[in-house]
Length: 243
Ligand code: ADP
Ligand code: MG
Image (cartoon, rainbow, N blue to C red):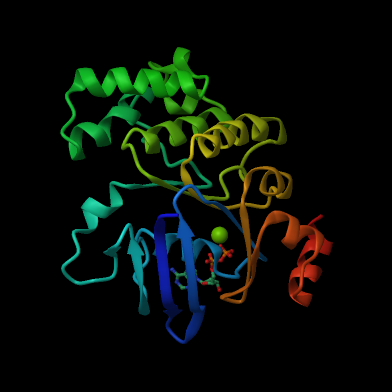
């Protein structure tokens, strides 16, 4: 099993507020990890540390062996391997769907327009939105925007995908389509770290579930272990509230 992400003694503080309290974990290639926990527990901060959208206070993060926190690290190089999908899509409003998807590969990977467009069309087909290539983001539903956001992230051909509550801002009827796209990615072997409140998805798709509370990973196990036999009182308490 290849180690994809190694987190060692990760501490993140905002001022005096310790948001991540000495996190140690290893995520292997092909792992689909769902992170669950109460609001404000540090889920987004953890995810953002994994591609250094957030500077860590101390500790180290290795991505495929490269130290993300080292001074000499070529951050842009590492980030190209990590796709991120946010709750609020963040599509570029002034660009068509196709332009949204081809921008980064042309810019950062120096892909030709022709090649980037061909790839974008395949990606749009794979998320069921081939007919939207010339549409504007504002004309799409939330669920469609999120599927475009996933296609856009995949256009960089990442080998890790991070998702921060990708379905939390969606109307309920949109959630399934987005989760199906994610499910397919998981089946294809993508290494995924997903912050979610979709416990059904976590049970079905994740091979690991981690429970975080007040900046501590209190529990880490298979969905079976976490949902059917949680060990920690706080996990039990949290699951009682959300299940
Ligand atoms: P979650 O995603 O689990 O809801 P977050 O990671 O967003 O939690 O936040 C964890 C804690 O860190 C919260 O107390 C939040 O107020 C604090 N926090 C998050 N981002 C910042 C920031 N940029 N500046 C100061 N405090 C922050
Ligand atoms: Mg969050």
